[in-house]
Length: 134
Image 1 (cartoon, rainbow, N blue to C red):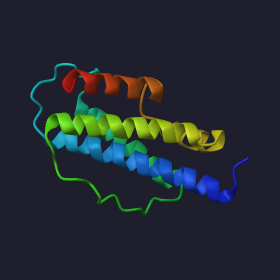
Image 2: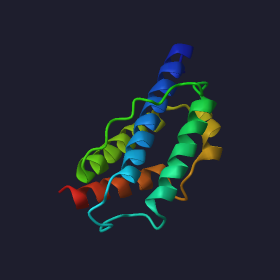
Image 3: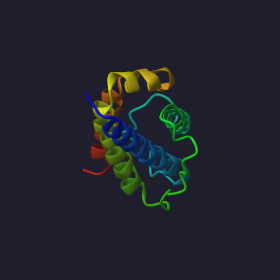
Image 4: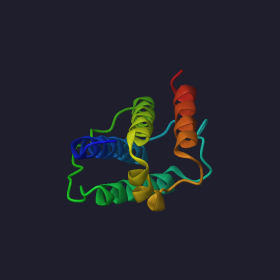
């Protein structure tokens, strides 16, 4: 059983991973893509990024960190670096998700933005990263 401090630490780790995932996805909207080749989703990336942003805001609210600033967004980087950052952030977020209690997972599940499991989404992003940055 987790103590209150362990629960708070786990939630904070998930929110931090969510912030990095959100920020990396926002950067991908801002930079020029060399092509859409290998892009794994059926919707536009702008639509996907919007859903990621809404989920991140819901996560912050659910875990009592709604006022947390997200101004730590890095400067735009080349496409391959940004896809790599998105993949790394998605993987860290998946690991942080696995550390959450079932009650915490249930608290943020209503705002979950994907039709697939997060594990499947992360693997699609990792495969995309491998396609653009072998």
